[in-house]
Amino acid sequence: MATSNPKRVLVPVSNPLGGIRTYMLYNFKPIERAGYHFTFLAPAGHALDTFRSDWSDCPETEFLSFAEGESMWRAIHSALKSNRYQLIHSQGLRAGTEAAIGNYFAKIPHLITLHDVIVPQNDVPGKMKWLKKRISEFFTKRATVIIPVSRDCSENHLAHFSRWKKGPCRIEVISNGINVKGLLESRECFRQSGRPGIRNELGIDEQVVLGGFFGRFMPQKGFKYLLEALSELARRGFGHDRFRLIATKDAHGYRDETIRSVAERPEVAPMVHFVEPVADIAPLMSQMDVLVMPSLWEACGLLAMEAMVLGVPVIGSDAIGLREVLHDTPSVMPPKENYLALADAIEKYINHPFTNQAKAFETEAQQRFDVVTAADQLLDIYQSL
Image 1 (cartoon, helix red, strand yellow):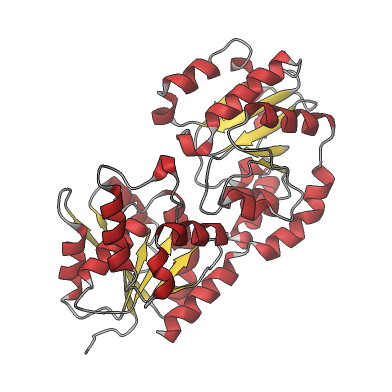
Image 2 (cartoon, helix red, strand yellow):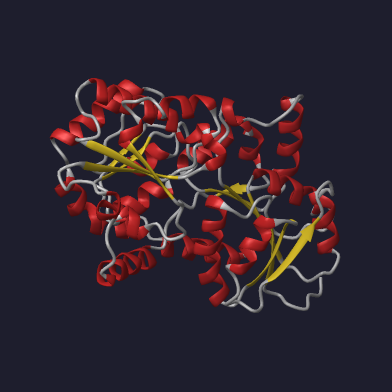
């Protein structure tokens, strides 16, 4: 098949925000510098417009969109008719399924990166789940390579899509990573800026332990269990004079009645400070005494990686995807969905912080979680195809 650019990659993505956006920025920018150019295909709207601005320094990058209500696979099929693409790299199972359908006859080498896990709370939506999964399995097993972002993610999907084991697709786990160099540079810039820290801004005494929660308030992130743990801590005598939580605002999630009712309890409200979300987490994260991640599930806990790279202790649940990141680190892993165990872990940290262990692990974390390794592995797959 003749191509006008043998190194142009079509990247279908259902929602180019959140962890998927981070993944593409971290991994694709080094690959772009290696001579590959990307065309992102996503639903028209604010998410795509926001993501487009991230690539202003890459003039060869292109963007295709399709209207709400239009089939994604049709947009992909239409794009492939141009014969400009030698590779497809879908982001997520849904986009991977749509691309596999659109690519059924074109048969262009196709990579699918899996960014989530399948759990009862996060299963295929709507009715006829079994049929939808079988259809997805039928098409996606014809992909060239399926790339889970963690071993947990791989085992989870193979339990639901067992036919992948027989091919023709092959499974290659490439563990997620973070931009270590950028994170450390950002922390250093903040330290040299002379700007007041979050304690000064909020008037929090140095003796009070600062905990950070920087996920959204969606059920997956377990925020309600953290709030219940704070209520339990206050009951035990570890109130706002001993522990404060810094949480990034999530206006949509805060409308959840369960979350709001707990957050507004008299003993909890003084313990929680809501701050505006930030694009660069390093300055805020580096000021925390401990990061708290009570997740119910993760594909791969990037936030925990960022904390450990900055030498911040982590209290994270034993949830799938997060447990893999925290394994063999100084972190503490209370059972997920157990606010009493979470309260125990926070109380233990208040009394006996493991700050020194976290600081000592910082260098190893920077080597273990550097995205350069993941980007190199991904580039090897690109070049092999």
